[in-house]
Length: 94
Image (tube, rainbow, N blue to C red; front, side, top):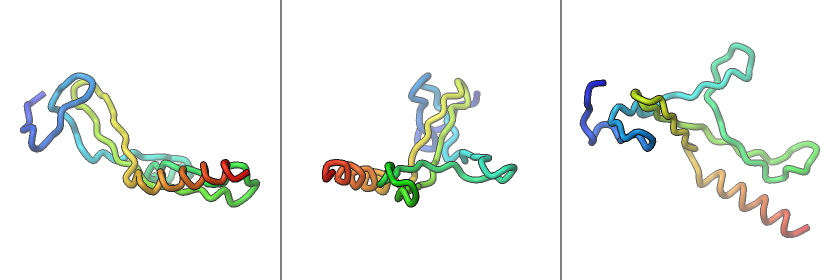
C-alpha cells in the first residue's frame, strides 16, 4: 500500500497502518434492493406494543486498506445517549 500523510489519514487501531479510508458509506439493504444508509437506534419505550419511541441516527465508517478492519461510528451519538437516558428514567419510574 502507498503511504499517506498522517494528517490526511488516521492510523488503523488494529494493525497501525496509515492506509485508512475515511467516510466510507455503510449500506443496509433492508428495503429489498434499495440502498439505504445504515442506522443505529435506541427505543425510549421498548416495552410498548406500538410507538416504541425509537430514535435513529445515521452511521459513518472507516476501513483499513491493509487489514480490512472497519470502525463504525454513530453520526450523532448524543442523540442516542439522550434516548437511552430517557429509557432509563422510564424504567426507574416504574
